[in-house]
Length: 64
Image 1 (tube, rainbow, N blue to C red):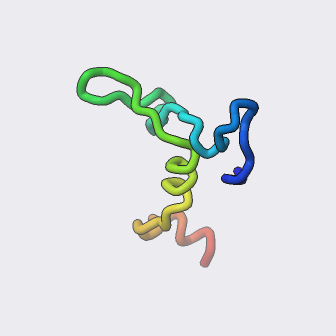
Image 2 (cartoon, helix red, strand yellow; image 1 turned 90 degrees about the vertical axis):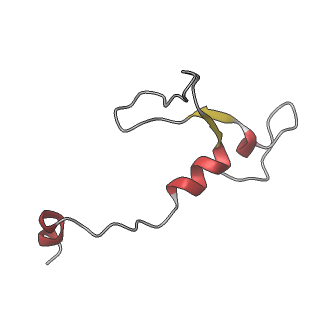
């Protein structure tokens, strides 16, 4: 998403909040059971982070 694009209220779309989802598809919650939110820019940065774990042997066989 382009950081320079703005919504009707004049805010960049990258500042919009979305709930952070866990591996089971449900929203993550903090110790007080409140939903954890992150900006679109934070979500994009987290998803673009390099993968540091090596592939499992079964996955490695697919590319051998």
